[in-house]
Image (cartoon, rainbow, N blue to C red; front, top):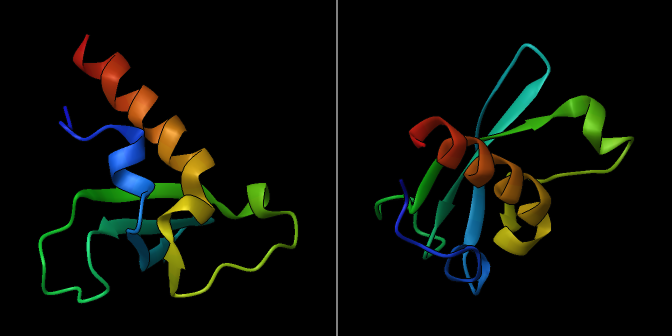
Length: 81
């Protein structure tokens, strides 16, 4: 399980798009915009149908995708329990 709190993950951090597959966008969270740094959290899935016409760019503030970070962390925690 990730040791970072939700606040740690979103405060001043960046979400960077990594790939699209079967209707799902995947983002990684980085503590700097430079993607050569190690990701804090990887493969956060965002179903395209959840966006309802909203636009997500290649690079977003992590707080922009906070809803899906919460869902992802809850799923990871449930699997490890």
